[in-house]
Length: 346
Image 1 (cartoon, rainbow, N blue to C red):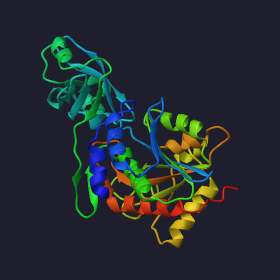
Image 2 (tube, rainbow, N blue to C red; image 1 turned 90 degrees about the vertical axis):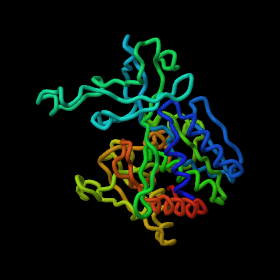
Image 3 (cartoon, rainbow, N blue to C red; image 1 turned 180 degrees about the vertical axis):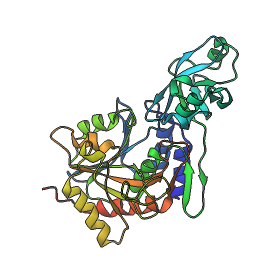
């Protein structure tokens, strides 16, 4: 069941460079469904379904935005750096999990209370470098005894829950939604081609795992699976983000106003035509915001024809992201059907 799979993935913890617990979930889910699973020196998990000489890479990044311990002061308060694109007010007063050498340790992100702020401080808000983590320790030695040291990764303490209809909320849907999509596809697909399901690392800090794995695998074409921002709620105009949650997965034509990916026409047409023939709802996107692993992949070696299939997700890069499970299921159907047909890449 897609919802239960996404719950396992969302509740797992894995900041950029520390994706191990997510890998453990993926390995269990794919056991018996793929021909081989290997992990490269970068940390990417590569699941292979063997077929003919035509190679398709489907990439889903495993990492979530998080934090890392930078310094512990004499009173036991922990300073940190942000890993990935945090909006600072989102972090203020959150509860967190520190993944130390002795296991999980819980803490809270503290900062100057609003009661003690002057008017200018309230207007500006608390910056990341003004925040700290409080684990209840009274000094630096107690923090060390908890197994916390410089370099300890930190994630938000938030769990997946169901909302009304087929909608759910949790942390790290960016990009555990794409991971769930890729797992389900590999479980169901019967393709004549060789399929590389690549669960990439360090996307949130520079698309790093996608770049190295695409270079090594050198596929004939590629699809990244990720999330995208819908314009269907208060605060966003549809003209700026003209896709909606619950209306199907999103096929990227251009993202980041062309500074990131300009998708290969043949790959886009392939997916669009398959969706039309099988009455699978899809949405098309020309985006001005962020980008995905496809940007790194399509610039590898002599160029790899690529696009992205995204799941519309509200409030991304927060602990309370929201999506519609139907969109993931429709994306799985699209990929399973498309991988039976060879795209025209000329």
